[in-house]
Length: 574
Image 1 (tube, rainbow, N blue to C red):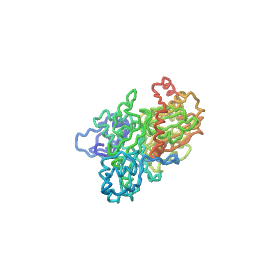
Image 2 (cartoon, helix red, strand yellow):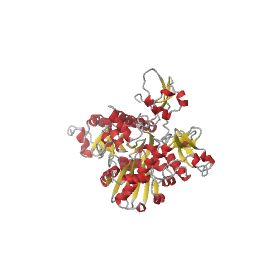
Image 3 (cartoon, helix red, strand yellow):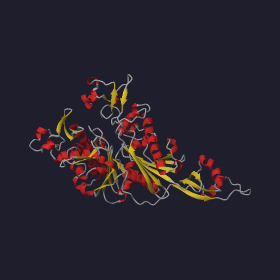
Image 4 (cartoon, rainbow, N blue to C red):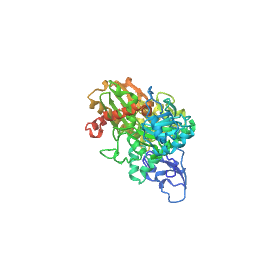
């Protein structure tokens, strides 16, 4: 990782995920493997040289083959778009000035202010002003943001662009917007390069604690990726970096802190206090972002340490803030944020779901990349489908896990308590083609999804999934109780994010993720965080609205609620 070689990992190098498999020469014998490695690497793979990178201490010359990290991710970048009246903070206006004369010796800046009003001047723009004025016969285009002079250019340069960006724990999505028209010109999505430091925010925060340069490493990795995204936009669309004047950023609270280079250590420790939650605006050059040197980063506000700017953006995109109807918003991914309410009152919580819904902590789990099992139907001859129809499969992603658990429950292979039954217990109840898929894997019952690759879902995976599902379901119930309503009072349920968009509603209901009565009220709204970020870029009204929503949403710390443990235990049942 120090040498920028991507290594697959979810646990941050603690030997618990088994993803950082590499081939090492000289080959070690199986009895020389660490106990952690023996859980994930078979005798046969050991003979081929497989090891876990996080366990190897380099004490001799060696050759290490690192499998290529699959970046062909299926990342959700679309959402329900809204018509927006442009109310930009950044404007490019044409100014034609009277040339100076002996009897009119006003300085260049004062001459400009005479035409456009008093402005906050920036030294490096004033340095450009004399030459730009005279090269263009005192006919120039001026870029102003909230009364601040950002740039002066020739009258032929009418280009004005902005970026909206959603930085998730697992993925990043960025949108290139023409601010003159409000039209989206391009979109870029990729996996978050911080994943090798840990699949979830707690692991990444711990990395900043245990490593002297931990925060710097995480910050630099995301800044480098943002600059890679910008370079992609510039090259593909023929855009000059100096014509980008604003980037609006949303993300969970930890990602926002790391992006800005702000310590996030206290978010992981009770009472879970972030360094800040208000909106931030600063020059992009302060953190090395390659746009116009005077361009701005705008970071939307957050509710708490575990309900971030992405949730506020999703609330804006859903429209629940302006409706009298009671609505439930869930963005279920590596972090599970839930909001319940209407225009008068909103309550929120973060369910400690862990990264199971993103495939981490699952034996053969993976993020949503090409080849990941994403759909399962045990009544079909070909019991699964993969993203991109790629074969053989490489693992199983979140929506595939939900489908598999739901199907196993329907077939009676998994009972309501989450126990996966052995083949001999189901001999008279299960058809032979499914019965033969029940095997033993590392001393536990497992269901084979693919024979050729040996991909299975194990009893341990079911337990991991129960914890994640139970946390979400319990969080919903706590919010319902907090508002003193019944589940049937909820008129709309918004599923946001990649997981919420690709999950089968039937499967979500069947596993008890949300109350059955809400089945026909679910609306999948795509990448609502990204849509909300675009809305805040295009209209200052929505940035102001984000501040109002921050102050309106009440955060409920689930671990401070005595009844949460009871709700959690009950919600783990299927």
